[in-house]
Image (cartoon, one colour):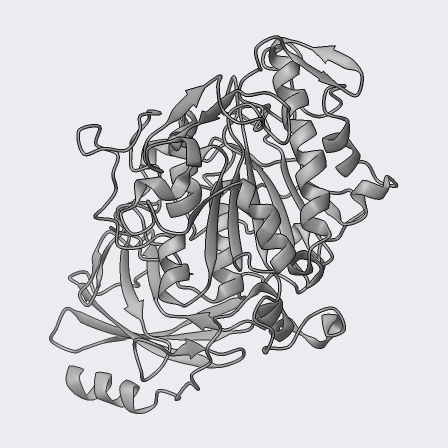
Length: 494
């Protein structure tokens, strides 16, 4: 009887049409709805919607008033350009949105390097150091099955990694600093400081030396429209606001020293490179600039927020301030949604749970959609999970139940999907479980993999389509079996 039940359910599965979602920002968002048709591009352009990530350092957006070092960005006299992006009515803020509650990825995710690795792979792999990558240091994550740049490469999406002063280093995996370099185009000195810890691709074998360019190449690539569809831009440690130049820095007629000089140097860099990017075809074609900071300074609580600023024609703009909680996993989830990738499946240490809700894995994290106009970034699909009646077999401890899963949203849900049973009755065991959760809380919950369509590798659950899943329990008490179901887009176990 068990086999008959299962075969019957398989026979009644509704076929799902294969729908490929890979593409550039402009191409994918065009699928989101007719409301933005006039703003979005069709599928043909090769460089629709290039994305530019500018990686900055070591300063909070806001912090408790008793914390004075380093100083915060919001309202800082050394950061007039950054604050102009946050100010409604300022011309620089016309296409800018920003987050007020962008928190550290997890407790004790420090210093810089773990955050850059997290931005690339959704985890810091338990490594909390700034050491250059090497097997001896234990921070070459060559065994990683997936990470963001690998997804780009696999799907044929072009990406480039612009690293300031990398041309003055022996290789992209070796840091280099000194005072006798060429004159820096942004700060006018001969000081240079390339830090591998600020280069997220350097820690993965397939991307460590791939597509790496000195920052001086960016200007030529913008002019020739040869930037990637996705671009990392890392200033050196002077222009990213990490370290003050020798003797401080004169900015807009004011001589800043110490930490304020660091902030002024970063602000100066952004005030030059952002207008240059915005003038390019790659940006004008529905591109996106994200200004990203690595880690909170002084604490991991809700009193410490990081700056996260988005600039785009597709952003809500006019200095819109979002109060949605976000972190580095929000960025990863956003681009996986935009390009139609499967979600990264990396074990995130349970001890690194953010005190503000645990937004430390792609299964539950908010994306960046609130910073953009409605329907630009796909929303988390709204799913109905309706358990049917439980069938207790006579003279047996076996119990069967059909679960009805329907996609009520407007975005397709790709494989893999996992139906997790939280708080399952202590008297019951899910016999046909795929496994039990060991990464996503609550730990120890049984789950079963759900395939979206007949082709397990490629199919998706399209909007308003449904899937039937059979659960097989063992219940010695033969009583009602209770649990709380939820559907996850990433396996809850390594």
